[in-house]
Amino acid sequence: MFKQTPKTITGRGGMSAKIDAARRAVKPGCMTQACIVASGADLDCIRSVFSPQYDLSYGKPKGTLFVTPGSELEKQALLELEAETAANGDCISQEARNSATAARDEARKLQALPQEERTKILYTVAGALLEHEDELLKANALDLEAAQKDGTSIQLVSRLK
Image 1 (cartoon, rainbow, N blue to C red):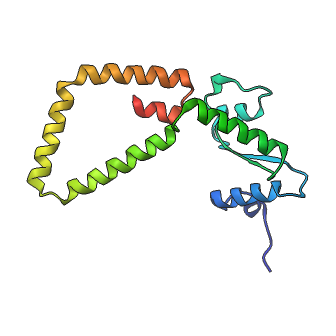
Image 2: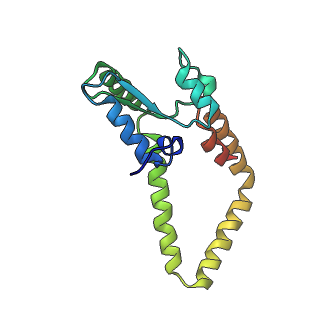
């Protein structure tokens, strides 16, 4: 017979176990109406979850909110999400996903070319980057400034540096 020990009660289940537990916690008929799965390693994430009011100094909200389906809280969260999407137009994460997909598709095309032709293309791109270095650095500085004002996550901002 298997005996659960403290080591097997917590952890070891991965993200899918956490998501399953959150869904079970908020299913209709349970006393819990909301649950957040977030990183316990990010102190600002923990602060943002437990703060009585949202504080921009903690960055954008991090974590996933699970609510009881059909609850007032779910309706409120969906309304806020719709308002944010309408205010921002096209979702930034979708834009990033589209860019990543396009880059992957182009990389596959490059892989199909002969080595000599790929090398020529890479040197041409490198030359163009060096030629426009000042413009690119100025644009990057503007992106960094905008990201910090918008509360973009530290992980994404660090990729701009």
